[in-house]
Amino acid sequence: MKNIYSNIRKVNTKILSKAVNHLKRNDLIGVPTETVYGLAGNAYSRNSVKKIYSLKKRPKFNPLIIHYLNKDQIANDVILNNNFFRIYKNLCPGPITFILKKKISSKVTSLATANLKTIAIRFPKNKMIRKLLKEINFPLAIPSANKSGGISPVEPKDVAEEFGGKVKLIIDDGKTKIGLESTVIDLTGRAKILRPGSLSAEKISKILRSKELTERKFKKIKSPGSIKKHYSPGIPMLLNQKIVNKNFAFIAFGSKYKNDKNIFNLSKESDLDEAAKNLYRIFRIIKNKNYKKIYVAKIPNRGIGIAINDRLNHAAKF
Image (cartoon, rainbow, N blue to C red; front, side, top):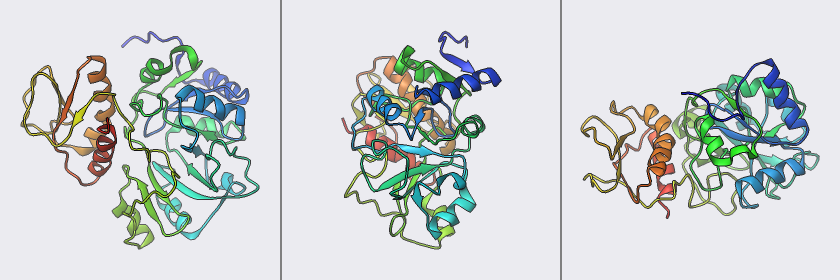
């Protein structure tokens, strides 16, 4: 499809240099990760982070995830522990975010951490964003590149639809591989999952040799994705539906559903990875078609299906 947005550019040496210059000037850019597209800014700059919150209309109490190239870059920002090293060795870089205690000496602006004593950090796997992180001497605050509470972007045009020319550069790396946000694990005490993602609690528990990873109690919001209404197309949604209503959009899963103009199938092959990759794309299609209500078929609650159901439950809070 022809690119109609002048601020969406395929990465090359010139565009990479331009991206670096924008970030050094505390401008924001749209970037790909393996999960969703993000809105990137200098995590050490209060001015840059302030722009992120303003553009996204994000509540100041909702912290951002700070992205680094590798563990060597985080020594001055967070207090590390054995659980972190175990997971890092096995799963990083990748779609996992760690909640760790913030060092007093950290240069990460308190605005990015919502004035908490913790920092959410991640080491993205996407090759393009890793190239960018190699070219700068500061980490990047990168929330999803959408207005707060809305549908996360999974391709560059989604970012342009959200913000238009307010983001001067959006780096085009095609559709994201996973399509759902990272798994978030709190390692400040007993390890626990705060947000499910493509890396399951079962997989992480084997690495930590622990069975205490499914507890999710929020005394404070330490992580993105903790607000009740999130990932939403802004349309009333009914989950676990069996009957197709022709007057409304129906999000299907599996081969038993016929092709029809109001039926949007996450995966005809009942493939949960494919379903995860298609979820936000289908949300955006339905929204653009101006449907007044969405019915959703039951999604198996296993593997990445747990993360899909988490996003559906948040999106259904209307």
